[in-house]
Length: 87
Image 1 (cartoon, one colour):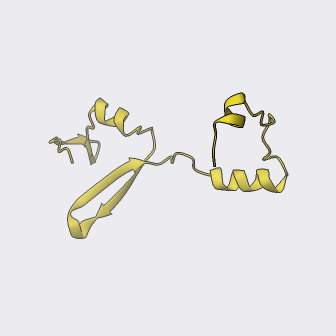
Image 2 (tube, rainbow, N blue to C red):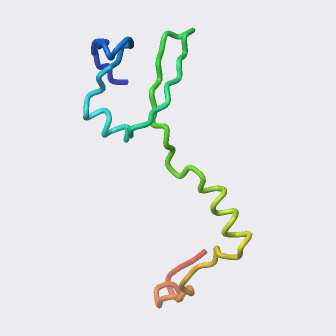
């Protein structure tokens, strides 16, 4: 785990943390983030509010229910498939 030291800054009546650009890019943080406070362990976890592949399960289930989950192209075996490939 890499450790970066920074200072709290004033933002109106609140305080904020400046997150270096390299960390923002590496973690793919967007405008919205989620904060998880683990007070018993003295940690604050910040993560992107958007999740990769969020909602994909529901979308795939809807496609299957609509019969829209078939391959677009038929499988065409090659010479290698016929002669070399073994299961």
